[in-house]
Length: 575
View 1: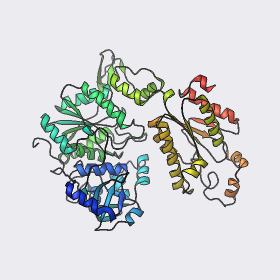
View 2 (view 1 turned 90 degrees about the horizontal axis):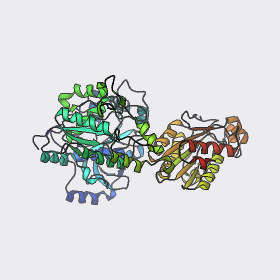
View 3 (view 1 turned 45 degrees about the vertical axis):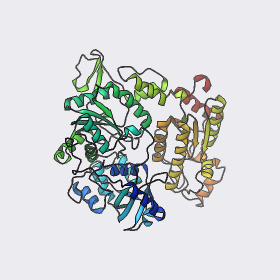
View 4 (view 1 turned 90 degrees about the vertical axis):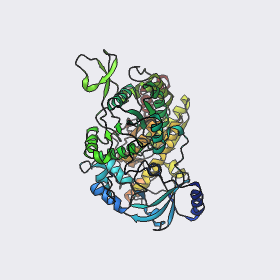
Protein backbone atom coordinates (compact mmCIF):
# COMPACT_ATOMS: atom_id res chain seq x y z
CA UNK A 1 0.00 0.00 0.00
CA UNK A 2 3.04 2.30 -0.14
CA UNK A 3 1.88 3.83 -3.41
CA UNK A 4 -1.33 5.17 -1.85
CA UNK A 5 -1.69 8.67 -0.44
CA UNK A 6 -0.34 8.95 3.10
CA UNK A 7 -2.83 9.46 5.94
CA UNK A 8 -3.02 12.90 7.48
CA UNK A 9 -0.16 13.24 9.93
CA UNK A 10 1.65 10.31 8.33
CA UNK A 11 0.10 7.27 10.04
CA UNK A 12 -3.35 5.73 10.27
CA UNK A 13 -4.56 5.63 13.87
CA UNK A 14 -6.17 2.47 15.30
CA UNK A 15 -7.64 2.85 18.79
CA UNK A 16 -9.18 -0.64 19.04
CA UNK A 17 -7.49 -2.79 21.68
CA UNK A 18 -6.81 -6.53 21.49
CA UNK A 19 -9.64 -8.90 22.55
CA UNK A 20 -7.89 -9.81 25.82
CA UNK A 21 -7.62 -6.17 26.87
CA UNK A 22 -11.22 -5.54 25.78
CA UNK A 23 -12.43 -8.37 28.01
CA UNK A 24 -10.39 -7.00 30.90
CA UNK A 25 -11.88 -3.51 30.47
CA UNK A 26 -15.43 -4.87 30.37
CA UNK A 27 -14.82 -6.64 33.65
CA UNK A 28 -13.38 -3.54 35.30
CA UNK A 29 -16.06 -1.20 33.95
CA UNK A 30 -18.93 -2.44 36.12
CA UNK A 31 -18.26 0.25 38.71
CA UNK A 32 -17.32 3.02 36.29
CA UNK A 33 -19.51 6.00 35.50
CA UNK A 34 -20.97 5.97 32.01
CA UNK A 35 -21.21 8.60 29.29
CA UNK A 36 -24.13 7.91 26.97
CA UNK A 37 -23.27 9.07 23.46
CA UNK A 38 -25.76 10.54 21.03
CA UNK A 39 -25.67 9.64 17.33
CA UNK A 40 -23.39 12.54 16.42
CA UNK A 41 -20.87 11.55 19.10
CA UNK A 42 -21.03 7.90 18.02
CA UNK A 43 -20.16 8.94 14.47
CA UNK A 44 -17.20 10.95 15.75
CA UNK A 45 -16.06 8.07 17.96
CA UNK A 46 -16.32 5.55 15.11
CA UNK A 47 -14.07 7.69 12.90
CA UNK A 48 -11.63 8.15 15.80
CA UNK A 49 -11.45 4.41 16.44
CA UNK A 50 -10.92 3.38 12.80
CA UNK A 51 -8.48 6.15 11.86
CA UNK A 52 -10.84 8.23 9.74
CA UNK A 53 -9.89 11.23 11.88
CA UNK A 54 -6.15 10.51 11.97
CA UNK A 55 -3.93 11.76 13.51
CA UNK A 56 -6.39 12.41 16.38
CA UNK A 57 -6.11 9.77 19.10
CA UNK A 58 -9.12 10.98 21.04
CA UNK A 59 -11.44 13.90 21.58
CA UNK A 60 -9.62 17.21 21.90
CA UNK A 61 -8.36 18.65 25.15
CA UNK A 62 -8.14 22.35 25.96
CA UNK A 63 -4.77 22.97 24.28
CA UNK A 64 -5.77 21.32 21.00
CA UNK A 65 -9.15 23.05 21.11
CA UNK A 66 -7.61 26.49 21.57
CA UNK A 67 -4.98 25.91 18.88
CA UNK A 68 -7.52 24.76 16.32
CA UNK A 69 -9.90 27.66 17.00
CA UNK A 70 -7.18 30.32 16.85
CA UNK A 71 -4.83 29.07 14.12
CA UNK A 72 -6.14 25.72 12.81
CA UNK A 73 -3.29 23.81 14.44
CA UNK A 74 -3.20 21.04 17.00
CA UNK A 75 -0.93 21.60 19.96
CA UNK A 76 1.82 19.60 18.19
CA UNK A 77 1.59 21.87 15.12
CA UNK A 78 -0.32 19.52 12.77
CA UNK A 79 -2.87 21.31 10.60
CA UNK A 80 -6.47 20.66 11.71
CA UNK A 81 -9.44 22.81 10.67
CA UNK A 82 -12.20 22.19 13.25
CA UNK A 83 -12.59 21.45 16.95
CA UNK A 84 -13.78 17.96 17.86
CA UNK A 85 -14.73 17.58 21.51
CA UNK A 86 -16.76 15.18 23.62
CA UNK A 87 -19.40 17.48 25.09
CA UNK A 88 -21.42 16.54 28.17
CA UNK A 89 -23.93 18.25 30.43
CA UNK A 90 -23.21 19.45 33.94
CA UNK A 91 -24.71 16.37 35.60
CA UNK A 92 -22.55 13.97 33.59
CA UNK A 93 -19.41 16.05 34.19
CA UNK A 94 -20.10 16.00 37.94
CA UNK A 95 -19.94 12.17 37.95
CA UNK A 96 -16.49 12.12 36.34
CA UNK A 97 -13.10 12.46 38.02
CA UNK A 98 -9.80 13.43 36.38
CA UNK A 99 -7.51 10.42 36.36
CA UNK A 100 -10.37 7.92 36.58
CA UNK A 101 -11.92 5.88 33.74
CA UNK A 102 -15.42 6.18 32.26
CA UNK A 103 -17.38 3.93 29.93
CA UNK A 104 -18.51 5.39 26.59
CA UNK A 105 -21.79 3.71 25.65
CA UNK A 106 -24.21 3.77 22.73
CA UNK A 107 -27.93 4.37 23.02
CA UNK A 108 -28.57 0.74 23.97
CA UNK A 109 -25.97 0.73 26.74
CA UNK A 110 -23.31 -1.19 24.77
CA UNK A 111 -19.83 -0.14 25.84
CA UNK A 112 -17.92 1.05 22.77
CA UNK A 113 -14.78 2.43 24.42
CA UNK A 114 -13.11 3.31 27.69
CA UNK A 115 -12.00 6.88 28.34
CA UNK A 116 -9.43 7.68 30.99
CA UNK A 117 -10.43 11.22 31.91
CA UNK A 118 -7.46 13.59 31.67
CA UNK A 119 -9.31 16.89 31.31
CA UNK A 120 -12.68 18.36 32.16
CA UNK A 121 -12.94 21.86 30.72
CA UNK A 122 -15.34 24.49 29.37
CA UNK A 123 -14.69 25.22 25.70
CA UNK A 124 -15.10 28.72 24.31
CA UNK A 125 -18.26 28.10 22.26
CA UNK A 126 -18.06 31.54 20.63
CA UNK A 127 -14.62 30.69 19.25
CA UNK A 128 -15.83 27.23 18.20
CA UNK A 129 -18.81 28.68 16.34
CA UNK A 130 -16.55 31.15 14.54
CA UNK A 131 -14.24 28.30 13.50
CA UNK A 132 -17.13 26.13 12.36
CA UNK A 133 -19.35 28.64 10.60
CA UNK A 134 -17.02 31.54 9.84
CA UNK A 135 -16.91 34.93 11.52
CA UNK A 136 -19.13 36.48 8.80
CA UNK A 137 -21.81 33.82 8.98
CA UNK A 138 -23.07 34.15 12.54
CA UNK A 139 -26.76 34.76 11.87
CA UNK A 140 -27.50 31.45 10.26
CA UNK A 141 -30.09 29.17 11.75
CA UNK A 142 -27.50 26.42 12.16
CA UNK A 143 -25.45 28.70 14.43
CA UNK A 144 -28.42 29.14 16.75
CA UNK A 145 -28.97 25.37 16.79
CA UNK A 146 -25.28 24.87 17.58
CA UNK A 147 -25.54 26.97 20.74
CA UNK A 148 -28.85 25.35 21.66
CA UNK A 149 -27.71 21.75 21.34
CA UNK A 150 -24.09 21.94 22.55
CA UNK A 151 -23.58 21.17 26.26
CA UNK A 152 -21.24 23.46 28.21
CA UNK A 153 -18.57 20.98 29.35
CA UNK A 154 -16.05 18.86 27.42
CA UNK A 155 -14.04 15.87 28.54
CA UNK A 156 -10.86 14.47 27.03
CA UNK A 157 -8.45 11.66 27.68
CA UNK A 158 -6.94 8.41 26.43
CA UNK A 159 -9.38 6.21 24.52
CA UNK A 160 -9.29 2.44 24.32
CA UNK A 161 -11.79 1.09 21.81
CA UNK A 162 -13.52 -2.19 22.61
CA UNK A 163 -15.53 -2.49 19.40
CA UNK A 164 -16.84 -0.27 16.62
CA UNK A 165 -20.38 1.02 16.98
CA UNK A 166 -22.80 -1.73 15.98
CA UNK A 167 -24.28 -1.62 12.47
CA UNK A 168 -26.58 -4.36 11.27
CA UNK A 169 -27.11 -2.87 7.82
CA UNK A 170 -24.92 -3.00 4.70
CA UNK A 171 -21.95 -4.40 6.57
CA UNK A 172 -20.12 -5.29 3.35
CA UNK A 173 -20.21 -1.58 2.43
CA UNK A 174 -18.78 -0.29 5.70
CA UNK A 175 -15.06 -0.73 5.08
CA UNK A 176 -12.76 1.11 7.47
CA UNK A 177 -9.99 3.36 6.12
CA UNK A 178 -7.48 0.51 6.45
CA UNK A 179 -9.77 -2.02 4.76
CA UNK A 180 -10.54 0.44 1.97
CA UNK A 181 -6.85 1.16 1.43
CA UNK A 182 -6.16 -2.56 1.17
CA UNK A 183 -8.94 -2.86 -1.39
CA UNK A 184 -7.52 0.01 -3.44
CA UNK A 185 -4.13 -1.70 -3.37
CA UNK A 186 -5.62 -4.99 -4.61
CA UNK A 187 -7.47 -3.17 -7.40
CA UNK A 188 -4.37 -1.24 -8.40
CA UNK A 189 -6.02 2.11 -7.73
CA UNK A 190 -3.49 4.88 -7.17
CA UNK A 191 -5.63 7.97 -7.79
CA UNK A 192 -9.12 7.88 -6.28
CA UNK A 193 -11.87 10.50 -6.46
CA UNK A 194 -14.32 10.37 -3.54
CA UNK A 195 -17.83 11.55 -4.42
CA UNK A 196 -19.45 12.57 -1.15
CA UNK A 197 -23.24 12.72 -1.18
CA UNK A 198 -26.20 12.64 1.18
CA UNK A 199 -28.91 12.70 -1.49
CA UNK A 200 -30.32 10.35 -4.10
CA UNK A 201 -28.12 10.15 -7.20
CA UNK A 202 -29.84 10.52 -10.57
CA UNK A 203 -28.38 10.52 -14.08
CA UNK A 204 -27.01 14.07 -13.85
CA UNK A 205 -25.05 13.22 -10.68
CA UNK A 206 -23.81 10.00 -12.29
CA UNK A 207 -22.52 11.90 -15.32
CA UNK A 208 -21.01 14.64 -13.13
CA UNK A 209 -19.10 12.17 -10.95
CA UNK A 210 -17.99 10.04 -13.91
CA UNK A 211 -16.77 13.08 -15.84
CA UNK A 212 -14.87 14.41 -12.83
CA UNK A 213 -13.17 11.04 -12.24
CA UNK A 214 -12.20 10.66 -15.89
CA UNK A 215 -10.80 14.19 -16.10
CA UNK A 216 -8.77 13.61 -12.95
CA UNK A 217 -7.52 10.27 -14.29
CA UNK A 218 -8.88 8.62 -11.16
CA UNK A 219 -11.06 5.73 -10.11
CA UNK A 220 -14.30 6.62 -8.33
CA UNK A 221 -15.36 5.97 -4.75
CA UNK A 222 -19.02 6.82 -4.18
CA UNK A 223 -18.89 7.74 -0.49
CA UNK A 224 -22.37 8.65 0.79
CA UNK A 225 -22.82 10.15 4.25
CA UNK A 226 -24.87 7.79 6.43
CA UNK A 227 -24.10 9.12 9.89
CA UNK A 228 -26.88 11.62 10.52
CA UNK A 229 -29.62 12.35 8.01
CA UNK A 230 -29.95 15.94 6.90
CA UNK A 231 -33.42 17.45 7.34
CA UNK A 232 -35.70 16.29 4.54
CA UNK A 233 -33.38 13.48 3.41
CA UNK A 234 -34.70 10.08 2.47
CA UNK A 235 -33.49 7.54 5.06
CA UNK A 236 -30.12 6.02 4.28
CA UNK A 237 -31.54 2.53 3.71
CA UNK A 238 -33.45 3.71 0.65
CA UNK A 239 -30.56 5.91 -0.47
CA UNK A 240 -28.07 3.05 -0.31
CA UNK A 241 -30.38 0.79 -2.34
CA UNK A 242 -30.53 3.57 -4.94
CA UNK A 243 -26.72 3.83 -4.99
CA UNK A 244 -26.53 0.07 -5.47
CA UNK A 245 -28.79 0.45 -8.49
CA UNK A 246 -26.60 3.12 -10.07
CA UNK A 247 -23.08 1.72 -9.50
CA UNK A 248 -23.36 -1.04 -12.18
CA UNK A 249 -24.08 1.67 -14.77
CA UNK A 250 -20.56 3.11 -14.51
CA UNK A 251 -17.83 1.71 -16.81
CA UNK A 252 -16.55 -1.66 -15.61
CA UNK A 253 -14.06 -1.56 -12.72
CA UNK A 254 -14.25 2.24 -12.42
CA UNK A 255 -16.55 2.78 -9.41
CA UNK A 256 -17.01 1.32 -5.95
CA UNK A 257 -19.47 2.12 -3.16
CA UNK A 258 -18.60 2.56 0.52
CA UNK A 259 -20.55 4.18 3.37
CA UNK A 260 -19.18 7.06 5.44
CA UNK A 261 -20.40 7.29 9.09
CA UNK A 262 -19.93 11.03 9.18
CA UNK A 263 -21.95 13.49 11.28
CA UNK A 264 -22.12 16.58 9.10
CA UNK A 265 -22.04 19.78 11.10
CA UNK A 266 -23.49 22.12 8.48
CA UNK A 267 -20.50 24.43 8.82
CA UNK A 268 -18.45 26.61 6.51
CA UNK A 269 -15.26 26.08 4.50
CA UNK A 270 -13.44 24.70 7.54
CA UNK A 271 -15.79 21.73 7.44
CA UNK A 272 -14.87 21.18 3.79
CA UNK A 273 -11.27 20.83 4.91
CA UNK A 274 -12.27 18.34 7.61
CA UNK A 275 -14.04 16.26 4.97
CA UNK A 276 -10.92 16.45 2.81
CA UNK A 277 -8.85 14.98 5.63
CA UNK A 278 -11.37 12.19 6.23
CA UNK A 279 -11.34 11.19 2.54
CA UNK A 280 -7.56 11.40 2.46
CA UNK A 281 -7.39 9.02 5.42
CA UNK A 282 -9.62 6.63 3.46
CA UNK A 283 -7.03 6.59 0.64
CA UNK A 284 -8.55 9.18 -1.73
CA UNK A 285 -6.44 11.70 -3.66
CA UNK A 286 -9.37 13.86 -4.84
CA UNK A 287 -12.83 14.56 -3.52
CA UNK A 288 -15.99 16.19 -4.78
CA UNK A 289 -19.12 17.00 -2.82
CA UNK A 290 -22.50 17.00 -4.55
CA UNK A 291 -24.16 20.28 -5.32
CA UNK A 292 -27.71 21.11 -4.35
CA UNK A 293 -28.25 22.68 -7.77
CA UNK A 294 -27.87 26.22 -6.41
CA UNK A 295 -24.10 26.42 -6.07
CA UNK A 296 -23.90 25.15 -2.50
CA UNK A 297 -23.47 21.82 -0.79
CA UNK A 298 -24.65 20.28 2.47
CA UNK A 299 -27.89 22.19 2.66
CA UNK A 300 -29.16 22.35 6.25
CA UNK A 301 -32.75 23.33 7.06
CA UNK A 302 -33.15 25.57 4.05
CA UNK A 303 -29.78 27.29 4.51
CA UNK A 304 -26.75 26.14 2.51
CA UNK A 305 -23.70 24.80 4.24
CA UNK A 306 -20.36 25.63 2.71
CA UNK A 307 -20.53 27.03 -0.80
CA UNK A 308 -18.63 25.06 -3.41
CA UNK A 309 -16.46 28.00 -4.47
CA UNK A 310 -15.64 28.98 -0.87
CA UNK A 311 -14.81 25.38 -0.04
CA UNK A 312 -12.44 25.05 -3.01
CA UNK A 313 -10.74 28.29 -2.04
CA UNK A 314 -10.22 27.05 1.52
CA UNK A 315 -8.90 23.66 0.41
CA UNK A 316 -6.63 25.29 -2.20
CA UNK A 317 -5.26 27.73 0.36
CA UNK A 318 -4.12 24.81 2.51
CA UNK A 319 -3.36 22.37 -0.32
CA UNK A 320 0.18 21.66 0.82
CA UNK A 321 -0.97 20.74 4.32
CA UNK A 322 -4.05 18.81 3.23
CA UNK A 323 -2.44 16.89 0.37
CA UNK A 324 -5.77 16.22 -1.38
CA UNK A 325 -7.46 18.09 -4.21
CA UNK A 326 -11.09 19.26 -4.12
CA UNK A 327 -12.72 18.89 -7.53
CA UNK A 328 -15.49 21.38 -8.38
CA UNK A 329 -19.01 19.99 -8.39
CA UNK A 330 -20.47 21.05 -11.71
CA UNK A 331 -24.13 21.07 -12.65
CA UNK A 332 -25.16 18.85 -15.55
CA UNK A 333 -28.43 19.17 -17.43
CA UNK A 334 -30.12 17.08 -20.12
CA UNK A 335 -30.01 18.48 -23.68
CA UNK A 336 -33.02 16.92 -25.38
CA UNK A 337 -31.76 17.72 -28.86
CA UNK A 338 -28.40 16.04 -28.15
CA UNK A 339 -30.02 13.21 -26.17
CA UNK A 340 -27.38 13.39 -23.46
CA UNK A 341 -26.37 15.28 -20.34
CA UNK A 342 -24.09 18.28 -20.77
CA UNK A 343 -22.50 20.83 -18.48
CA UNK A 344 -25.04 23.51 -17.66
CA UNK A 345 -22.34 26.12 -18.25
CA UNK A 346 -21.74 24.70 -21.74
CA UNK A 347 -25.35 24.77 -22.94
CA UNK A 348 -25.85 26.70 -26.18
CA UNK A 349 -28.78 28.90 -27.09
CA UNK A 350 -30.34 26.29 -29.38
CA UNK A 351 -30.07 23.47 -26.81
CA UNK A 352 -33.41 22.27 -25.45
CA UNK A 353 -32.39 21.94 -21.81
CA UNK A 354 -34.49 19.80 -19.46
CA UNK A 355 -34.16 20.01 -15.67
CA UNK A 356 -36.04 18.74 -12.64
CA UNK A 357 -35.68 19.90 -9.06
CA UNK A 358 -35.90 17.76 -5.96
CA UNK A 359 -39.31 19.30 -5.31
CA UNK A 360 -40.43 18.22 -8.80
CA UNK A 361 -39.40 14.65 -8.04
CA UNK A 362 -41.17 14.62 -4.68
CA UNK A 363 -44.35 15.96 -6.27
CA UNK A 364 -44.27 13.36 -9.04
CA UNK A 365 -43.75 10.59 -6.50
CA UNK A 366 -46.56 11.97 -4.36
CA UNK A 367 -49.17 12.03 -7.12
CA UNK A 368 -47.94 8.99 -9.04
CA UNK A 369 -46.76 10.80 -12.18
CA UNK A 370 -43.95 9.43 -14.33
CA UNK A 371 -40.34 10.32 -13.62
CA UNK A 372 -38.73 10.47 -17.08
CA UNK A 373 -35.96 8.09 -18.06
CA UNK A 374 -33.65 10.96 -19.03
CA UNK A 375 -33.71 12.12 -15.40
CA UNK A 376 -33.22 8.92 -13.43
CA UNK A 377 -32.47 5.24 -13.86
CA UNK A 378 -35.49 2.90 -13.72
CA UNK A 379 -33.99 0.99 -10.78
CA UNK A 380 -33.57 4.20 -8.78
CA UNK A 381 -37.15 5.27 -9.53
CA UNK A 382 -38.41 1.84 -8.48
CA UNK A 383 -36.63 2.12 -5.13
CA UNK A 384 -37.98 5.62 -4.60
CA UNK A 385 -41.53 4.50 -5.28
CA UNK A 386 -41.10 1.68 -2.78
CA UNK A 387 -39.89 4.12 -0.11
CA UNK A 388 -42.09 7.08 -1.06
CA UNK A 389 -45.43 5.79 -2.31
CA UNK A 390 -48.14 8.13 -3.54
CA UNK A 391 -49.77 10.29 -0.90
CA UNK A 392 -52.94 8.20 -1.01
CA UNK A 393 -50.83 5.35 0.40
CA UNK A 394 -48.66 7.35 2.81
CA UNK A 395 -49.08 7.89 6.50
CA UNK A 396 -49.37 11.50 7.58
CA UNK A 397 -49.49 13.79 10.60
CA UNK A 398 -52.00 16.59 11.14
CA UNK A 399 -50.47 18.96 13.70
CA UNK A 400 -52.98 21.43 15.19
CA UNK A 401 -51.48 24.38 17.06
CA UNK A 402 -53.19 27.31 18.76
CA UNK A 403 -54.02 28.95 22.07
CA UNK A 404 -55.73 27.13 24.91
CA UNK A 405 -59.46 27.19 24.17
CA UNK A 406 -58.97 27.84 20.46
CA UNK A 407 -60.75 24.62 19.45
CA UNK A 408 -57.77 22.41 18.65
CA UNK A 409 -59.07 19.39 20.53
CA UNK A 410 -62.55 19.73 19.06
CA UNK A 411 -61.14 19.78 15.52
CA UNK A 412 -58.74 16.93 16.28
CA UNK A 413 -61.48 14.73 17.72
CA UNK A 414 -63.83 15.45 14.83
CA UNK A 415 -61.09 14.78 12.28
CA UNK A 416 -60.18 11.52 14.00
CA UNK A 417 -63.77 10.29 13.78
CA UNK A 418 -64.13 11.24 10.10
CA UNK A 419 -60.86 9.53 9.13
CA UNK A 420 -61.81 6.40 11.06
CA UNK A 421 -65.16 6.49 9.32
CA UNK A 422 -63.39 6.61 5.95
CA UNK A 423 -61.10 3.69 6.90
CA UNK A 424 -57.91 2.57 5.20
CA UNK A 425 -55.47 3.85 7.82
CA UNK A 426 -55.09 3.59 11.57
CA UNK A 427 -55.67 6.92 13.32
CA UNK A 428 -54.07 8.00 16.62
CA UNK A 429 -54.98 11.15 18.54
CA UNK A 430 -52.16 12.84 20.45
CA UNK A 431 -54.08 15.54 22.31
CA UNK A 432 -52.07 17.97 24.42
CA UNK A 433 -53.74 17.10 27.74
CA UNK A 434 -53.61 13.35 27.09
CA UNK A 435 -49.93 13.51 26.19
CA UNK A 436 -49.18 15.54 29.31
CA UNK A 437 -50.89 12.90 31.42
CA UNK A 438 -49.49 9.76 29.80
CA UNK A 439 -46.21 10.73 28.12
CA UNK A 440 -44.89 13.86 29.84
CA UNK A 441 -46.32 13.78 33.35
CA UNK A 442 -42.98 14.70 34.93
CA UNK A 443 -42.53 17.86 32.85
CA UNK A 444 -43.31 21.38 33.94
CA UNK A 445 -44.16 24.39 31.79
CA UNK A 446 -40.80 26.06 31.28
CA UNK A 447 -39.79 26.67 27.67
CA UNK A 448 -37.31 23.81 27.88
CA UNK A 449 -39.98 21.39 29.13
CA UNK A 450 -42.58 22.61 26.65
CA UNK A 451 -40.15 22.05 23.80
CA UNK A 452 -39.29 18.59 25.13
CA UNK A 453 -42.99 17.72 25.33
CA UNK A 454 -43.51 18.77 21.69
CA UNK A 455 -40.44 16.81 20.57
CA UNK A 456 -41.90 13.71 22.24
CA UNK A 457 -45.16 14.26 20.40
CA UNK A 458 -43.21 14.71 17.17
CA UNK A 459 -41.27 11.50 17.70
CA UNK A 460 -44.41 9.46 18.34
CA UNK A 461 -46.14 11.09 15.36
CA UNK A 462 -43.18 10.33 13.09
CA UNK A 463 -43.24 6.65 14.06
CA UNK A 464 -47.01 6.44 13.46
CA UNK A 465 -46.55 8.16 10.10
CA UNK A 466 -43.64 5.90 9.17
CA UNK A 467 -45.90 2.90 9.73
CA UNK A 468 -48.52 4.25 7.32
CA UNK A 469 -50.93 5.54 9.98
CA UNK A 470 -52.36 8.95 10.76
CA UNK A 471 -51.25 10.95 13.80
CA UNK A 472 -53.46 13.86 14.84
CA UNK A 473 -51.70 16.15 17.32
CA UNK A 474 -53.35 18.97 19.25
CA UNK A 475 -50.86 20.67 21.62
CA UNK A 476 -50.54 24.42 22.09
CA UNK A 477 -46.97 24.25 20.67
CA UNK A 478 -46.33 27.99 21.02
CA UNK A 479 -42.76 28.13 19.67
CA UNK A 480 -41.98 28.18 15.96
CA UNK A 481 -38.54 26.54 16.17
CA UNK A 482 -39.76 23.33 17.79
CA UNK A 483 -42.76 23.15 15.45
CA UNK A 484 -40.28 23.25 12.61
CA UNK A 485 -38.26 20.48 14.26
CA UNK A 486 -41.38 18.31 14.36
CA UNK A 487 -42.10 19.01 10.68
CA UNK A 488 -38.57 17.93 9.75
CA UNK A 489 -38.89 14.89 12.01
CA UNK A 490 -42.07 13.74 10.29
CA UNK A 491 -41.43 14.70 6.66
CA UNK A 492 -39.01 11.84 5.85
CA UNK A 493 -41.68 9.41 7.11
CA UNK A 494 -44.71 10.77 5.22
CA UNK A 495 -46.95 13.82 5.08
CA UNK A 496 -47.05 16.70 7.54
CA UNK A 497 -49.93 19.18 7.66
CA UNK A 498 -49.70 22.14 10.04
CA UNK A 499 -53.10 23.50 11.07
CA UNK A 500 -53.09 26.86 12.83
CA UNK A 501 -56.27 27.21 14.88
CA UNK A 502 -56.15 31.00 14.82
CA UNK A 503 -59.05 31.78 17.16
CA UNK A 504 -58.36 35.21 18.76
CA UNK A 505 -57.18 35.44 22.36
CA UNK A 506 -60.29 37.28 23.54
CA UNK A 507 -62.52 34.48 22.22
CA UNK A 508 -60.35 31.78 23.81
CA UNK A 509 -60.34 33.64 27.10
CA UNK A 510 -64.09 34.12 27.03
CA UNK A 511 -64.54 30.35 26.65
CA UNK A 512 -62.09 29.50 29.48
CA UNK A 513 -63.80 26.23 30.34
CA UNK A 514 -61.08 25.20 32.78
CA UNK A 515 -60.60 28.62 34.38
CA UNK A 516 -56.97 28.67 33.25
CA UNK A 517 -56.98 32.20 31.85
CA UNK A 518 -58.53 33.57 35.04
CA UNK A 519 -55.81 31.92 37.11
CA UNK A 520 -53.15 33.25 34.73
CA UNK A 521 -54.55 36.78 34.97
CA UNK A 522 -54.49 36.44 38.76
CA UNK A 523 -50.87 35.31 38.68
CA UNK A 524 -51.70 31.87 40.06
CA UNK A 525 -50.47 30.13 36.87
CA UNK A 526 -47.09 31.28 35.64
CA UNK A 527 -45.83 31.14 32.03
CA UNK A 528 -49.28 30.78 30.53
CA UNK A 529 -49.36 31.07 26.74
CA UNK A 530 -51.11 34.21 25.54
CA UNK A 531 -50.98 35.94 28.93
CA UNK A 532 -47.51 35.74 30.47
CA UNK A 533 -45.77 33.74 27.74
CA UNK A 534 -45.80 34.40 23.98
CA UNK A 535 -47.45 32.43 21.21
CA UNK A 536 -45.45 32.60 17.97
CA UNK A 537 -47.92 32.62 15.10
CA UNK A 538 -46.82 30.10 12.44
CA UNK A 539 -46.03 31.63 9.07
CA UNK A 540 -45.82 28.20 7.42
CA UNK A 541 -49.28 26.86 8.34
CA UNK A 542 -50.93 24.76 5.64
CA UNK A 543 -54.45 25.43 6.97
CA UNK A 544 -55.75 28.30 9.13
CA UNK A 545 -59.05 28.00 10.98
CA UNK A 546 -60.71 30.58 13.21
CA UNK A 547 -63.31 28.65 15.20
CA UNK A 548 -65.02 31.93 16.08
CA UNK A 549 -66.09 32.08 12.43
CA UNK A 550 -66.91 28.44 11.60
CA UNK A 551 -68.68 25.51 13.26
CA UNK A 552 -66.74 22.41 14.35
CA UNK A 553 -68.12 20.47 11.36
CA UNK A 554 -67.03 23.20 8.97
CA UNK A 555 -63.58 23.31 10.56
CA UNK A 556 -63.12 19.56 10.15
CA UNK A 557 -64.29 19.81 6.56
CA UNK A 558 -61.65 22.47 5.81
CA UNK A 559 -58.93 20.05 6.91
CA UNK A 560 -60.49 17.18 4.92
CA UNK A 561 -60.66 19.34 1.79
CA UNK A 562 -56.99 20.20 2.19
CA UNK A 563 -56.12 16.50 2.55
CA UNK A 564 -58.11 15.81 -0.61
CA UNK A 565 -56.40 18.60 -2.59
CA UNK A 566 -52.98 17.28 -1.58
CA UNK A 567 -53.88 13.70 -2.50
CA UNK A 568 -53.90 12.08 0.96
CA UNK A 569 -57.55 11.09 0.61
CA UNK A 570 -59.81 10.87 -2.44
CA UNK A 571 -62.35 13.49 -3.43
CA UNK A 572 -65.19 11.10 -2.63
CA UNK A 573 -63.79 10.57 0.88
CA UNK A 574 -63.67 14.32 1.54
CA UNK A 575 -67.38 14.73 0.83
